[in-house]
Image (tube, rainbow, N blue to C red):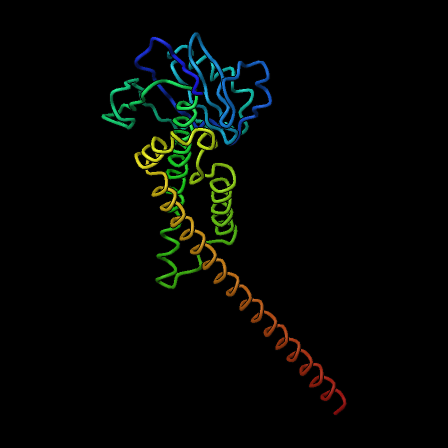
Amino acid sequence: METPLFSGHRRVSVRALFVGQRLDLGGLEQAERLATAPLLVRAGSSGAVALFRYGVVVLFGMDAIEEVGYLDDLKRLVVEPFEQPEYETIDLVADPNRSERVEQAELILHRFTVERLQLVSAVLAKSVVLAHYETRLAQSFDRVEPLAADLQSGNRARHPGRELLRHIGDTLLIHGKMVGRVEVLEKPEVLWEHPELERLYSRLADEYELRERQSALDRKLELIGRTAETLLGLLQSKRSLRVEWYIVILILVEIVLTLYEMFIRHGSAG
C-alpha cells in the first residue's frame, strides 16, 4: 500500500543537489525515516529529503530558509564537498485526472506518495550526477582535443607523461564512479515492490534522457582514455628510443676511449 504525503497540497517544489563525492548516511540515526533505498526522511516543517550515498540530496516541499538550514547541518556528513554543487529544480503537481509525466516544466503525479517521491528522487539524482560529469568531461575533452590534434600532426614532444597519466586516471575514476556508485541505467529498487510505477519511471528516464546521456558520456570517456593512452605509448616509445641512443653513444665512447688507450700504449712502446 502506498503511503501519502503532503496532504492538502496540490503543488510541491523539488530541488536536487550533487553536494559532494559521498554522503555518510550513518550520521542520520535520529532522523524520522519514511523509506529506504533510497533513504527518505522528514525534514523542515512539513517537507522530506531523499539522500543518496553517492552525494546527492533531493529536497521536497521545503522553503528557501529550510533548505539552507538543512544543507548547512548536512555539511558534517558530506565527504569531499563541491564548491559549486550541480542542481536541478522542478515542481510536482498532484492531479489524478492527468497522466503522470513532465509537462511544461512541471511533473504531474496522481498523488504525492512516499514511493513516487522515491522514484522522482532517484531520477533527479541520476540527472544531476550526469550533469556534473558532463561538465567535467567537457573540460577534459577540451584539454584532450589539442593532444589529438598534435598526434595527427606528428607533434608529440610538448605533452609530459604526468599530464597524460592524469587524463587516464581521471577517465578511469569517472567511469568507476558512474558504473560502481551511481548505476545510472539500473532501475530503482522501489519498482520491485511497486511495479505499477514502472511506466512513470520509464517516462521520467526518457524525459531526462538518462540512457542517451550515459551513452554519450561513455563515448567521450572512451575517446579521452584512448587518446591519452595512445599519446602515452608514443611518449614511452620515444623515451625508450632515446635510452637506446644513449646506450649506443656510451658504447661508442667506450670504444673510442679503448682505441685511444691502445694507440697511446702502442705509441709509447714504439
